[in-house]
Image 1 (cartoon, rainbow, N blue to C red):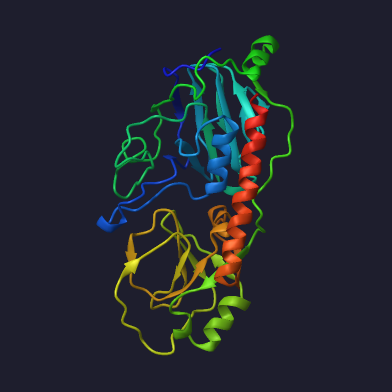
Image 2 (image 1 turned 180 degrees about the vertical axis):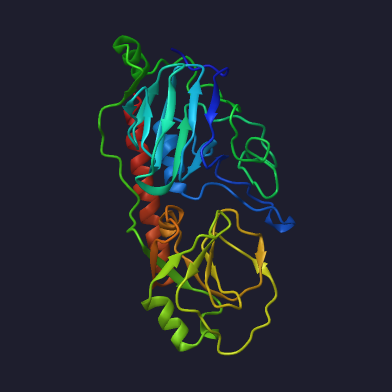
Length: 337
C-alpha cells in the first residue's frame, strides 16, 4: 500500500469528547482568540513522530472514552498518552508504537485504564480546513478542527498525503504478507515524559507576596484535588483556600498555559490549553512547562502536590523535557526506516 491523499476516516462512535488539535493557533491572543492546541504536548508530538509526520500535524485528542473509527485505506497510526484499551479486530493496539491498520478494520476503544487523554496520529495528518492558520478545535468559539466541534457519529475525517510520497513502508509490506488486521512494529523503548504523577513544580507568580504566609505554605504543603468542573480551559482545584493579605485591584493581562490564578473564593485554577487570552485574578504561580503533561492527564479526584522552584530550575527542566522528547522522536523516526 502507498499512502494517498484520499484516505478518509469514518466515525462509527465519537467517544465522550474527541476533537482535532494541532500545536495551536498562535499570534491571535491580542484579539481575544485562544491558542488552543493539545493538552499534552508530549503525547501529541511523539504520536506524530511515530508515523513520520511533522510535529504540527493535526491529531485526534480523545478524552476519557475513545471513539470507534474505520479507515478507508491501510493506515499507519500511533497512540500516545492515556490507556483507553484500544483494539482492532479483537487485538490490542499498543501505545507509543507505530501500528499498521488494514483498510475497513475498526479501531475501537474500551474502558479507561490510566490517564485522561489519548492522542491518535495518522500518517499524513488530519487535513480539515485551517482557521487562522491552525486546525486546532476551539469548541467555545466554534472554529477549527471539524466545524469547530467534537466528533459526531457519521463524520468523515480527511487524511493528507504521505510526508514521504512514493516510499513504501516496511510495516505496510509486513501487513500484506501477514494477512493480519493490524500489525505493530517491534517493541522499542520509547521514553515517557520526565515527570512524576501528581507532582507539579511551579515558579512563584507576580502576586505570590500578596498571599498570606499561611496561604503560601498551604499551596506548597497540602494536597489539592482536581474537581469535576475542570475542562480544557482550566483545572479547578479543591483544597485549602488561598487568602490574600488584603484585597487587590488588578488590570487584566495576558495568560499563559499553566498560570495558577486565584479567584475571590480562594480556590486555585490552573489555566490550560483553551484558556482565555487575558485574566485579572491574582496569579500565585506558573506551572513549569515540563510538568504540564501531568495536569493534562489528571482526572477529577486526582491529587496534585505543588512544589516551588526557581525560574532557572524551570528552564533546566524544560531543556531536559525537550532533549528527552527529541530522543524519543529520533527513535520513532529510526523505526520507520
